[in-house]
Image (cartoon, rainbow, N blue to C red; front, side, top):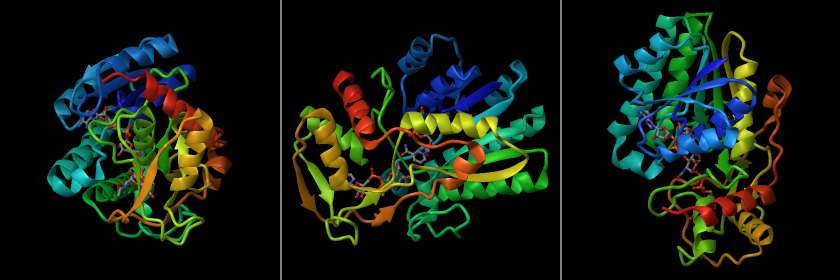
Length: 331
Ligand code: NAD
Ligand code: UD1
């Protein structure tokens, strides 16, 4: 299939482009490099030893999007392009609502206009809010605590309504848990700007000596050791989940958790990183981070049953691959 991958130069998008190319699909990337670099497109082609077509456009720009649909026979869209920093979304809500929601509307309108009916959307486990673990796709969603989370919940509703109104549409809403790690080549991975907000890149930068020590946000949650529990998933497993979702799309709207189904605490991740890489990660316990929940992990059985997909890579592999990328990475 010819797949349009919006945000294909980003962290999850770049790994997914490689998985698509390896599965024999053709890839057209649309990205404006708001949170990524042109070199990543070169690296995707180097790793996969295949060409991709690239458009530097903003996917909220309907005219620019329509040009791609006019120029190529697109069989499906995977829509990663979006802004994802939770804290920034509280400071700049309008930027987040505009970018993340208008992009979804512009792309689905182009799909309707050009008769493209396969659409895969990057959602997030954040839409579950502070629900009871494990999170199951059939649960009522609880309010999210920030504009970023709202953009995912609203986009899910828009796509659900589109699928209801137009039965020829096949839409997959993929709720990611916590993507970590990097491609085993060490060439692409997660390279956040400034001080990382997320745990794995923070740990990797402490290990590198770039940051002094990890601050563990609270050890008084009701979890295995008091620290927050999350479902960390290797980004390459996540990428493969997209290929499975795309290849198994049927009419209507389908929601899938993409996680491992297993929660790990902050301290368990620190220990796994130290063991995997034989390196020390100094840390201190500090106050809870506002907005955090105690535990978040998936019931991942629906994706296994319907897509034949499971996450295969363990915590040690995630830590080893995250560290290999961080060691190689030059800003
Ligand atoms: P990322 O920032 O690395 O990638 C997003 C890409 O989209 C970037 O290359 C950016 O330049 C591009 N982009 C943003 N707005 C654009 C626009 N208007 N037009 C064109 N390109 C645009 O983020 P990621 O971690 O790869 O996340 C991909 C998607 O998955 C996002 O929608 C994110 O919200 C969602 N998601 C991510 C996580 C996570 O932990 N990384 C978890 C759940 C959901
Ligand atoms: C964050 C986002 C969430 C998003 C998810 C995946 C917030 C509030 N939430 O969630 O919306 O969907 O990433 O991108 O940012 N931790 C530390 N020290 C650190 C960093 C994190 O102790 O320096 C802890 C956190 O308290 C949490 C765990 O590590 O228990 C994971 O944190 P993080 O990587 O930020 O992911 P989420 O909190 O799941």
